[in-house]
Length: 115
Length: 112
Image (cartoon, rainbow over all chains, first blue to last red; front, side, top):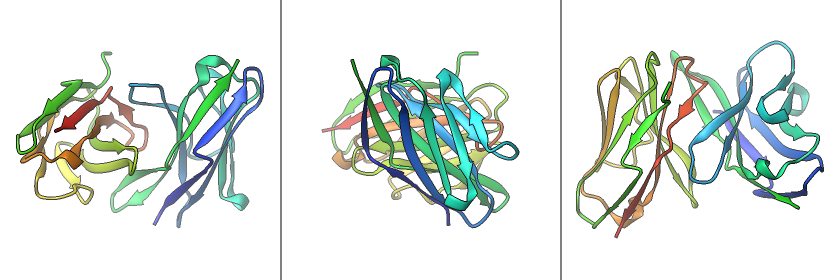
């Protein structure tokens, strides 16, 4: 069975500082991996995804993530935080279930950006 | 594209009442998902449909919950009777690639 662990339910960074949100997964097959972002009172929005190919993937708003199979990790980074990045971020893993694929979400990391 | 549309956005009801949440997926998407989000349990998949057929309802908490998708452009999630512990934000999502989901804005349900 697949699972996702997000280390740190709350992360605070200063505006302009590096953002690093950690995600580790467990999957019995090559996974598809995702980061979603949820702004207050909104639904989740896909930030970026890894399916196959290049292990460093770039997403919207300057975010990127690197798939490291040996570490079973898919950490999310952004070189310089902006106030508008304050939101909750969810890592998700997808693997085949029967004839389809399902997403399993992590518990989320609340990012606070300090002025 | 209008995105996934959910109604109502907020619902307050009394324990024992029937609640119906509605979802219109993105046109052309063939999969639809219902999720529940709470502080305690996070984001939980309740049920998902593929081509209007329920594929996995193992996340539906109990018989009080039911979901239907009568056609490709409409789905409902019904709770009857509702209980205070059902209070949560309910999200509908749709996708063409089953793992790349587009979420609606959610319905915030409060059961008193």
